[in-house]
Amino acid sequence: MWYHYGCVGISMGDDRLKDDVDYICPPCLATGTVAGSRGTGDSQKNKSRSASSTTEVCARPDCTYKKSSSDEFWVKRIVGRKTMAEGGSGRVEVYLVEWEGYPLGEATWQEDDTMGNPAELIADFVRATRKEGIDLDRDPNRTVLLKDAQRAGWTMDD
Image 1: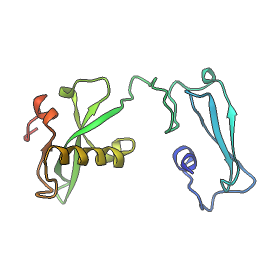
Image 2: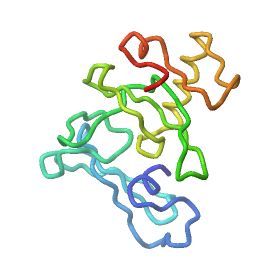
Image 3: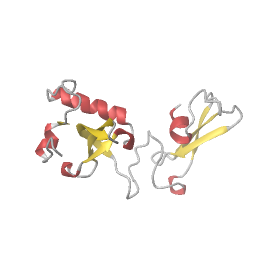
């Protein structure tokens, strides 16, 4: 169940799960409900909770509530990829991230572990490169930019 992993860091089959313990996840600010379940995940219930009695930022991954703290940013899409040396012994892929509500010129290079749901964002980027006729497999270490990023002033040397 997503909420054990996403909310309390426990996944199905974890030895720490107890049959007689309720797990209550953060409330959804959009719907005013909070999900919870027994230790095995066999019983699931929704409890109503007022959004005003919670924090301003919803922690549930399925929430459509968009209010966020001033230091939290939402990824709109990935518009580029490059490989960088890491620690002199390895390489790491970084992605050019366009942020929701910001112009593309203010995109930043980010490692995938700094993004929520990077697999989906990367899959969307791969689809976009295919639409533009870019072969990512030709040279996995080269910098790749979508046309929108190039039009916004990004270059292969950035």
